[in-house]
Length: 369
Image 1: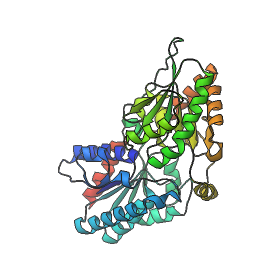
Image 2 (image 1 turned 135 degrees about the horizontal axis):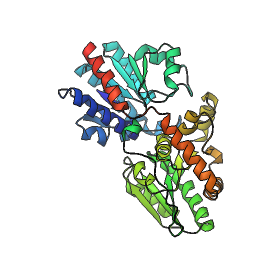
Image 3 (image 1 turned 45 degrees about the horizontal axis):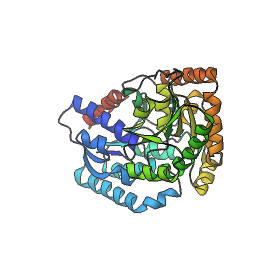
Image 4 (image 1 turned 30 degrees about the vertical axis):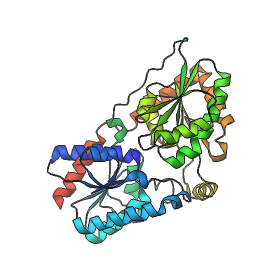
């Protein structure tokens, strides 16, 4: 049984399932996920798009779907008694399911760790109690969990199993600069981020010659939802690029991105970026009190310093975003320096093969049973 509650987890989970089937084609998979997991033969009991949410107060908007999904997952564990439960990120939901698996004696493999090193570090005790093995994807995570006595393996980042590679920027003077807007993969993120990104884009267009604006449409989001927001803020023609972040990154000179996995995708592609993030005021105040790290962007956390600008909460204004974009694009040396540092992040992520390494761990856990 596998549970991936978000779009990126769905993709990483699908690669893991494929790698496990390569090793044993008799395996049967079921659980919670999206189209990627369904496409590799996982029997989906609830679509992950009904569950994904970010923010402490925002969770209330999906509370009934979360309760339904959790009840369904627990029922399936009790009736099916799977040989292994694989959990991917999505900690507040998945750790509750792990508690049921523990009571039933079902081994738990947790792939893509909850970011307890960043905030709510008390959860590490729960992980140690409920999880049989943890597969982590960031280079500093293994040491943290070893220190806390959690069985752990560093497997590298699954993004490197994809087709992303450094993009060669188009520097011809007669072609427009393309700026990508990546507002997130959930409706709530897009509602908060896309309007302010579009207003910033309008300011940029007024100050730059030959510029195009492209908006990324995540696979988990309806095109009509994004089009309605764009129509309300239409001061310029925008291209909507579907098919995931890798599609828009191939065309961009710079992106304005909501903090998350997509920032690592941009880093792997070597695309300069400006990071923003907004949640409800209550969620922000509560989160700020619990966060133990100086940055929220994964790129900066892995680098150990700020190499891309972060505009968080009240700093994420159209004027501030436009100023940062224009500052970077107006300085060729800055662009080249940022690109080199971002490609350096790729070299810290452990190389390709994360899915294969996790599959080996999973098969071993099944064999041990």
